Amino acid sequence: MMAYYDDILEFEPNLQGAELRIGIVMSRFNLDISEGLLGACTAELKKYGVQEANLLLITVPGALEIPLTVKKLALSDQFDALIALGAVIRGDTYHFEVVANESAHGLALAQLEAGVPVANGILTTDNDDQAIARMTEKGAETARVAIEMANLHIGIDDIEL
Image (cartoon, rainbow, N blue to C red):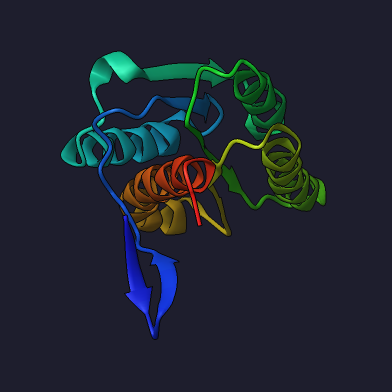
């Protein structure tokens, strides 16, 4: 959707998901949190009209495996946007930082290299309680981000000035 802002043509946020194809890659590590994210995410996708037939869910062992799978899906030219879901919960070792940083970095690279929007729904928290408190909102947020960014990129492809 386009509108004018001070005589400048502007894209407006578009959350209409009826025709969009969305892929979801979810970590099975911290599965209860991941499933909470997934439930909120899919409910929000459906709320905005994304059809179940246009959704694909792939699960992977952990957060570090998500970026490669996201990139593979992005390069398939079958999806308008992708969603990454998982939880990295701080432990007693440096491993938390590695997994949190590298999964986020990998997702950023995947979307830049493939040109397909990726909504990052990988929670990084200090403990389980924080993850539980955030999973519903974060899951729903990733759905809205995926829809908005997919529509934005489709709109950019169709722009004529």
